Structure formats: structure tokens, C-alpha cells
View 1 (cartoon, rainbow, N blue to C red):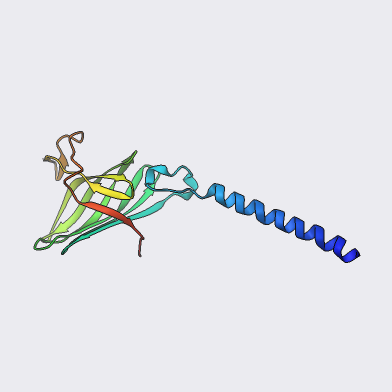
View 2 (view 1 turned 90 degrees about the vertical axis):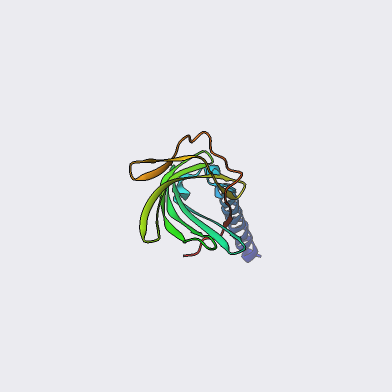
Length: 160
């Protein structure tokens, strides 16, 4: 009888402790569909990957987001064209990533600006008129970018 008076309160305390840990975990776990939905900066930097494959063409975007700064890698393997493999560094504003893409193609290192719309688990590459500024290619008008014609990558697990 005395044993049940001791054990029963201990079980109640343990269950109450477990319950509060579960509630705390539920509250701190964000359901992020895109990088802009992250509000808990303790989770940063965040790594997100996007891929696409269409026939013999493929592309892979791997980004690390730390507040509004973005770094990562971008690779294009387009059939019957030279592969482009390089790094990106830029900023994210809302759902738009604007970065410099430094890549090697045909033995030459080049830099061009890239813009991706990050929305609904996709990264849609923006296209528009470009011009040379110094040693890099940039969009003439970043407000006149078309996201419907470009490559659309889909969110995927990141592999090392």
C-alpha cells in the first residue's frame, strides 16, 4: 500500500514532464515550405537543395541561407552543351534569390548574375536581357525578369 503511494505520484510527474517536452518540441519545429517562412534564427544557417532532370539535361542548386546571405553551388549539365559547375554568393529578399554565379566552362572562369524565385518547393530561374558590367554579366533590368521560361528546379534532400 505504501509502495503505491510512492510509485503513483512518481509516474504522474514523469508523464507530466514528457508531455511538456512534446508540446515544447511541437512549438519549436517550424513547417517550412520555402526559406522565407523561417522565423527562428536559431535554426540558421539552413541548407536547401533543388534539382531537375529532363531527358539528358539536369541542374542542381545547393544553397546555404544565413539570415539574408546565401552561398552555395550551382551545376548545369545540358545535353550537347558544356557543363557549368560553380559557386553562388548573394542575397535573398522575400522569395527571390539574387546571386553571382562564378563558374568554369570550356576552361574559362566566368561570372554572371542569376535570379531564382523560391516558391512552393521550387526554384524557378529567371531570364532577361543581360549586359557586361566589368568582368561579369548582369541583368539590364532586374524588374523585367521572366520566371516562366527558365529552368524549374524542385526541392530535394541535400547529400554531402
